[in-house]
Image 1 (cartoon, rainbow, N blue to C red):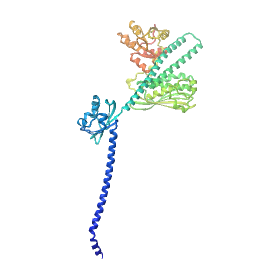
Image 2 (image 1 turned 90 degrees about the vertical axis):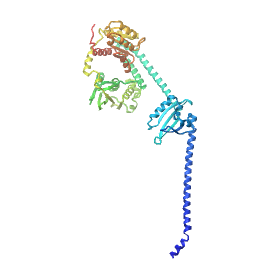
Image 3 (image 1 turned 180 degrees about the horizontal axis):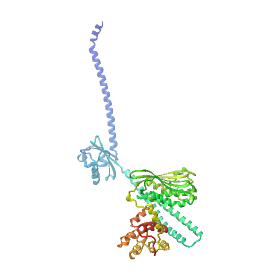
Image 4 (image 1 turned 45 degrees about the horizontal axis):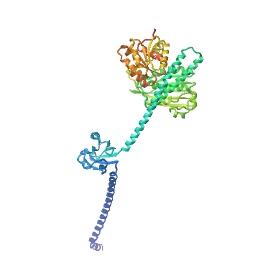
Length: 571
């Protein structure tokens, strides 16, 4: 039975085989058609994308593309808008790639190829140039692609961006001009205020030297206190103005931290302890003494914190701590804390304490005085020094102002300050130094200030000659025999010839005492920068107006003793 069935199936094997083959072929053809349709669809989409790209770019004046082989510098593609907007022709570029820089000025073209030749291809090369024909600023960006075989050049019109930059630069220049005008105005006002204040303080000094009763003494004390406050306010306003305008310069000179601590001890001890408050200045773990920095500004900040503590502390203690934190081969980090047991502050006020003219409340200014600038100035100075200030306070519990600073260590040869023992000896000698028997040349163009200086110095035992300007001072010195004058007090701002120029002229005179005679500046300009200018003019010291003649005598005494001019002079 099975055999008969198989024989019958054999009769149909050929037509069945043909049918199977046709079925497989139909499936194959169907699959190929589907694949072809997908491929055509994809090509259509790709072609549409290329078409869109070409249409967008070719109508754009802000973007132009060029593809060039990196080795032969042969262009292989250039967008169609290149000729219209940049005057670049594909055929000319193909003949000579240097045509690329024909749209630039010759100097710019040479500079581009120079940069292109040394380009490392790791990052895009950017080059700006001015296209004179259209008066547009262009940015050409070159990017390496396909294993550094090709370079893609993209040209973008940045004229609008350049116009915005120019506008912002003009605004910045205008703002800086206004700021500079403000600084100049404040500086001039400072000079104009200091000059009459010098006269006022001088007059007060002269009145104090005359017989008077206790009532007059009280009036004089109050007048001096008010003039001191006005002077400190002027200094604070000018400091703040200079900081805001980036004009405040910091010195980088060697100074002793121990000498600063000793100075703070002497400066405040008598005043604070006379109010029944204990005053301590201590050094903890300090293995380093000499550092590099701006001693004056650093001390100014700590003095401000101590003055503030003294103002608000009626009992307990004020403790100033210098503590060494970290030290390496070249630098040291220190902490300076001013702790008091005074009235403290509301912690919410701490966020505002370093703002200019900020005080905790209106009653503070009425009861304790102050402008509210000291803290703002201190914070700015410490920031310029690369440090930080932290404030810890509670009402009725006191306040801690903590400064963290890092100083570079001072080399042995840079240490110029006197050691403590020498300072004490020098101080004792300078206290005994008087102007008795000295002959002083004073250059001062303001008649009232000249009269006051002459009277005060003569009352101190000196013989005084007055020169009305710098040129008169030079002539006076030159026309007198060598050794006539012991030293010169030179005002800075004078007509005909200013004080610094006069000092340089005296130093240039062909006589021995012209090189050695001490010349001290008397100036209404009281900043560190002004002191440097005086030093550059070969002056030996700088005294800011209004002049405290007793302090002037002590400081000149220190100088004269240090440089071997001797102690008290006899007529």
